[in-house]
Image 1 (cartoon, rainbow over the protein chains, first blue to last red):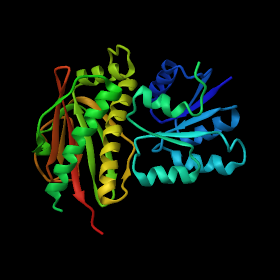
Image 2: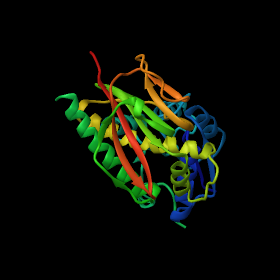
Image 3: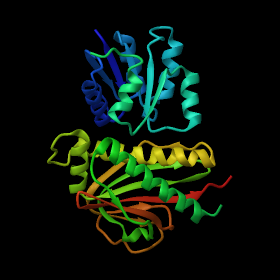
Image 4: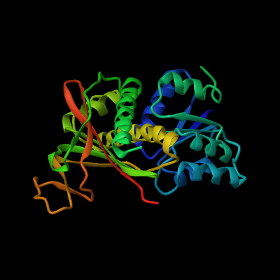
Length: 125
Length: 175
């Protein structure tokens, strides 16, 4: 059972990401959603998640703070994380990688770009 | 480099970022015309999406559009027919503003060093205007105060026969 956790403060963006994955042929059985890093941390530890997609700028706990918190938690700290964000500068990409993110996708993205990035972590039907 | 040159460069970045967004995630036609400066008292709109940024330069990137355009663009983004102005439409406008501002910020960061973006704010009403806090007369019953006397750099676009504007208010930060 493949579960993907989508952390983004925009419900519209969570819906778009979910739709793109469903239409791409990538194998996902369940999507779990969170509106900020804090909620994401709770859901990541409470569920058996295979992949996390995480925005950067969010209220309560930012995406980068979420990555650092999960990687430092010891629990479920090896779940792959792909940042999906408008933050596209080299410095931000580097910071995300150094903090433990496994992939990086800049918004806006095409369905093909999303599929290509997530194809490293999910099986194709 | 003068502020005018920087603003001109950012206007090009806004155009390029908006085109990319419409081609990749909105899937609606897009035409644009040259940017122009406008006094804040001349801005009248229904919907405002705002993202602020700080760094070597600080300011605001705003999306100004009608309710009808907001419905069209949110419907296209979500691939569903939205007929009422609900939270999903506001969320979509916030994300559109966020993606344009984020891409502009990435280009700015490459030239002027790292900058920080705010979370988007969406203001919805009818016949909204922005007025500077400088004792100018309020020109609308729905005026939003803005603590700047500088003009906005507006980049107008037309999509699906609807006009919308992306505005920029920019200042060089003092060290």
